[in-house]
Length: 52
Image (tube, rainbow, N blue to C red; front, side):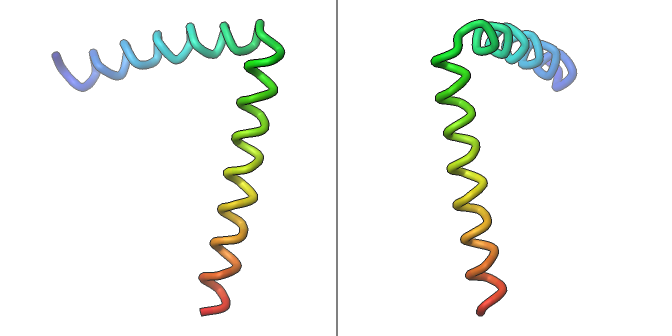
């Protein structure tokens, strides 16, 4: 399988998952919360790097 074929397969899988999440409020909330937490953690790590 070529990289291009793998990318297309991955895009199809992600599109199906995204559609599923968009239709399920609880899944959407969990995803949104996880992304928010990851962003906060990243900001904290950036602050630490700047201090050092």
